[in-house]
Length: 299
Length: 299
Image (tube, rainbow over all chains, first blue to last red; front, side, top):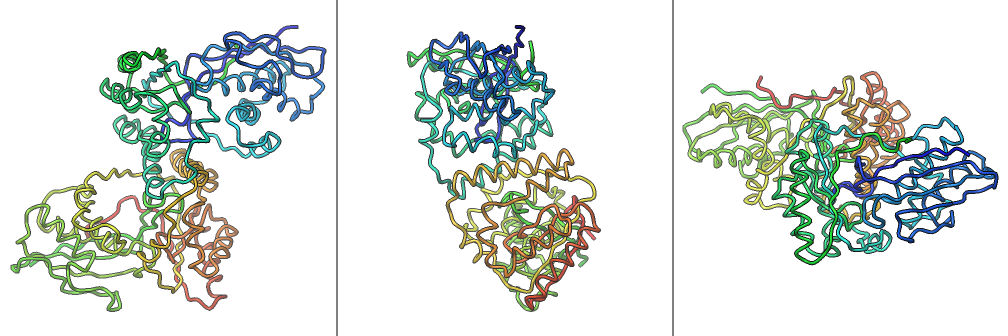
């Protein structure tokens, strides 16, 4: 049977000051998922490439599978047979939104193959359900209803902004990183972070590049996670020296992003950041990308 | 000698979700300050009206006086003689920014009478120094330098938004209210508040009235201060029932604001809120105003 192939991009989670509430999709890299109908009821993952054998084929244990399952339940199509091929094109557990991309691509592909006519926004809760499998903490049976109240906004992004993301070859798992966070924030830090978040959003709307840079300063999460990434502050200094507007940990790390005013600065920042890891004998990959305003697309 | 008269408006501090970082000036009421040069060095307060004898004439103890003194020191004019008349046109200790208005008006009037040519933005740190006298916590000699790093932005405000502010006749002093706040915030509340703040700002920029309403929900400060205002949650319910987008405590209270989509709703919300206080035998005043985008002005 004919399948639908969907590409879903990597993303920089949190963007430092927007812990758990803000992310930026990249133009590349991204995952590809192919969904096809099948005569065997349920979701079966038939192929996984690019994951180095690290992703499970059991649908309930796989973010793409869970996302597809929750979606089928929602539309009352539990008896529909679906086959998924997952082609990972980005590193796992890097903080670059690998699981979210697979989940988003899976739901979108399933929705399209079944011709539901649903918008990507409507599909979001099911993608999030898949992603939660990795980030943990909430029981899945509670996730779908609560996620339906999600409020999601596309922020205005000034033209030219470019991301350099450098991924050191260190493995940090999301769930573990998250459990290490203090569950309390000082009121003073809360106020400072709020001010920075507000400044960042205002900077985006006003295309005030200097303000974006001043505001991209995470006083709560970054200090707690920096120690898990060897040489983090040197990497950050290298990015800022190269002209980056700001630099922090992407998602739960270990990838580090540098938001840059243009692609040239991003290229230089990426190289400078990578060098800091190399000095410590840590391999690292550089990803350069504009900001993706479109998200998942059919290919 | 001829004086300069400046009007500075009342304001709604915090606006619920923007604790310590966001405020909205009203068109009325506001304070008037008249500054004149004098041949006697130093700042002298020669007249205070409308304060019911509650404001000190000693310049170092008066927010307008402190603001003027710090400003004169900054411009190296400590030996300049300045006389100030303070005409309070709003209640003290109400959470409506009375001290901030006097401080702002004083600095602006002094700057104009001395023809410094400085912008209102440049004057802000000195106004803030005066305001700190009331809010407490920081030694004054530390205030001026740290305030020079202030980042201040004028947010886009959709047309038509109107405030109803209801002030019950209860006295709550800023410093006392502030000391009662927990100095710790849970990470979950921090995230929720961040999301609401971000939604509120995005709502303002996109003129998305519904989003502004959904986002105006303070999960950190309001729950801690509500108990100090008898019947607060009934007042809030009355405002929302009347069509207000959101309702919370203005500044440190006891004044309560309701942000409304238009002046008619504001009028109804104001009356409904006042009635809740009256049922409890508490007198209350209603202030209705559009959002003031201009701030202090010479009159």
